[in-house]
Length: 611
Image (tube, rainbow, N blue to C red; front, side):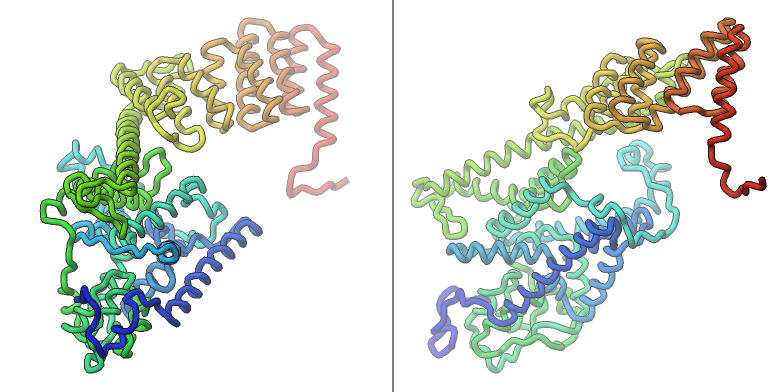
């Protein structure tokens, strides 16, 4: 275990500061991590230039392979990284991970201003990466295999689990056109870096996120246990100066481990080699150690800053905060929610210490001194209260999102049943579920628009859902209002069709025709608009014809010419109707136009002009 005082006289560490900086390996690692980011930049640039590129080389992409069978570059890369870890030890985290690069950069910047983050130690929170790894990579397969049986035994509980998508086998998704589809937007990515970089490093130590939040590290930790390679020690030259432990950014108690095992057995060791560089007597090196998986399996338990009650309380608190932030606003990704959860949990724990104890410090900053509250202490308290309020807001929104999704799924029907006359009526139970979905969805709107949320899901998904559920509940005026708002921002084909059907249902065919003309001026001849206009014209023509109004039927079809052009069959139908109405001269004109259109149209593909 690292000594708390100076090394004994005669040891080189006695004449050197305990904060001695790593040397050549640290610089090499910085170059390697910089090269990783350069490759990421080139990958992104290739996509921007060509429009198609290799799928993201990111371990999280493995989720899509395991759940949907989409074999991508991230899945292949992750498998290779795990296999190489089983051979060489946990090298990837120290030399190729962009999140480690971010944390190292944050730690380096803090050291430049005199802050050396000390590690926070918790045993239960150390299991978080393994739980996340199970959820991301093992749960999709277990759910696919076991959910059918579970539904048969526990139908009520199973209804809360997302349904399993049909397994279609493995498919090739190595090349993609929408490279950014699985990544958050930039205004989420920046806070992500601040939370998982600066916040976790300052609060939890130089590798805080790796220790308590990285699911990929859980796999590397397991693979490292069977690796024959390790940091090995020549104990004959060791003088127990403790510099190796003091300078380990992976929070491994190296001096204690080499004393017991003559090598580092903690699978948290990322093989960054900082300890090798800093050792004054050349005791440490990277090489083949005594292959003893049992020693790694029962590696010394890390110390903890918490009592058993504190460990359990902090773990429960972290879980509640995680569920509050996970996926809220359809924006916060899982790893960002994890970074927020462990950071806010730590802030609450430290703030409770601040309120109870006479002397409390954080990373060298005195928060209370003999009972007196300092300025850093007030800042910590303000940050903690703000974090709690933000978490309560996120949790409230997340609860409403979950409830809205539940009622939304219960009330799903084909909208033809609502918007097209003559369909079977909606049951009262479905209407009630839809009305409850509307209530919860409205609470998910931004507080400036009548809701309670700090943010909203991107795009128009919220307005579209509100319109859908309003229509099912029988509130057609509300549906019209919500869909009109959505159309102002995004005019999807499906939304155009549904809103058009609603306009006709509420205001009649003439209102639909006017609305279609206005949308044509705004959007051009969109296929959805053309189809709506064609369907309307044919229904109006048929209705007029059945009433014996041949000329009116012809005029309805004639209005369609401006939408689809001089289509020969349409022109002949108009001519036939005009003939029946006794307007022979105009009918002849339409037949001539039909003949001219046929002559000017190109021959069908595969035919040859034999004249």
